[in-house]
Amino acid sequence: MFRDAARIAFGKGARCVAVPEVRVLEVVRDGKRKKIGKVDFLLARVEGGKAVDFAALEVQAVYISGNSIRPAFDHYVKTGVLIEEGKRRPDFRSSAQKRLMPQLALKVPIFRRWGKRFFVATDSTFFSELPPMNPQSAGNSEVTWLSYKFERQPGGGFHMQSPNVVHTLWEDVETALREGKAPEKTELLAQLTESAKKLLPFTT
Image (cartoon, helix red, strand yellow):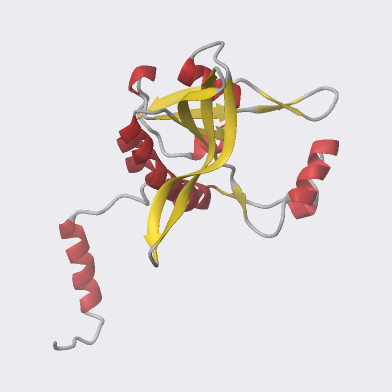
């Protein structure tokens, strides 16, 4: 993921480092400055021992309903058999609208203002479950998605394939991941009218 994102951001052959969990926002609480808004990784291009450019990389996995999936996951990777405890539903909605969207809303505008690239890495199944977003050219991209497919190997285990790269605008991402579509005002008023017929009114 680091190489894929850095190659798009800085070009082939750039010398880079991946710095984890960098806080990019600052607030003042009780008179003290505090850093918030961690980015999973900042990819820095390094020349002569100094960072000369950077890009952001967020990595988003899919939440699974219930308790820890790790034991069932480890068993599946080794054997290819999904035990009963592992037969649980991936929660795509919570992973996208409730987790990923607030993270992006907090951080993407900062990198847009700086004119720096912002990448989001997911697995291909999760990406396919996201609402459709209008693809853009690489030069116009404000949020670049790296969608990875994992293929089982003959000798066991899985191999992460080269990513499907999708360039998008932040406005399109924000619209796509917004929680549902707002109705027309007339539709909402009609719904409220029907509800009002069944409820006891009060006077202010």
